[in-house]
Length: 430
Image (cartoon, rainbow, N blue to C red; front, side):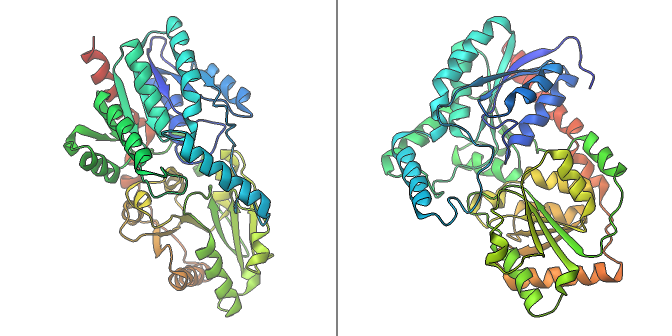
C-alpha cells in the first residue's frame, strides 16, 4: 500500500481495534489502513490485548503508530456463548462481576483505561503534530477520553457514533443517578465536538433527536468494504457443494442468538422437508460446540472457532448462502453491521434474519442479494430456507448483484468523506 510522504496527523481513539473482534473493529482497522493514502495518518490510541504485537508491527510498516493503554480489566478477544456454559458457579461469577461493574464504574467498565490512556496520549503528543482528535463511541469512555485529550491539547474533536446508547441492555446503568451521570457525560462529549459522524442514517436521526441537532449537522459515513477484498473474492473458485451450505461468520452478543435459525433447521430435518445429508450449516463464531447436541443437529451444524479474516472470506466462497443474524432491538434496527458489507462484496445470496423494517433489510433489498425473514419467526425462517434450498437443488440459486449500488460503499469513496470532515475541523482551527 502506497502512503504519501507528507501526511497530516491526527489522534484516533478507538477502544475496539485488532486483534479484538466484534462490531466496530473492522471500521477502525480499515480507516487506519486507508487514510494515509489520502494524506491523513492516524496515531491509534487503544487498549492492551493479547496477540497485539504482530498487529502493531503490521501497522507500523504502514507508518501508523498504535498506542496501547492498560484497562486493568483484561479485554478478551471473544467470549464463548452461552456465557459460563452450564456451570452454575461460572454463571454466578459472571453475573456478580457485571453487577459490580455496573454499580461502581461510570460510564462503563472500560473507563478504567481512561487515565492511563490520557497520560499516554499527552506524552505521545510531544513527538507528533496532530491536527485533531477523532474519538469513537462505543464504549462511551473512548469518546469521553477523546474529548478530554482534545481539550488538554487544545485540538478540535470529532465524535463518531458507531451505535446508539441504550439503557436497556444487561449491565446498563442500575439507577436513575447512574443514568443521569451517563447522560451528563454524553452531553459534554457532544457539546465539545466540532463535528459528529455516524455510520448510518438511522443513527444520525437518533443522535439529532437526542441532542436537538439538525440532521444535516451530522455526517453519515458507513463502514463499507475494501477494494482489495472485492478483488480477492473475484479470484476465489466457485463452490460445487453436494450439500446446501449456509454460513454465519461473526460474534453473538447482546440479544443476538442463534436459536431461530437452529430451530428452523431442526424443524426442516424432523419434517423431512430437506434430507439431513443435503444440508450443512457452518458457524464461525463464539458459540460453544455443545449447542449442536442441544438441537440434535450433529453432523448438520458445525461450530468453528474464529479465524483470520482472509480465511473467513474463503469460507464465504465455499458457501451457497450467507446468513446475517440480527436481533430485533432498537439499536439493530437503525445501525448497519459491518459484516453486511463483507457479505455484499462477496456477491453471494444472503438470508437476513432481522426486523423487516430495519435499515439493514432495506440495504439488502437494494443490493439484489437479500432474502429477509423476521428474526424471531422460526416458521418464516424455515420457509425461506426451504425455498432457497429448492432453488439450489434445481441449480437456479443465482444472484445478479446491483454493483452500482454496492460500489458506493467502497472505502476508497467513503474515506474521501471522512477526509473532508478532518480537513474541515482542522483547517477551521488553524
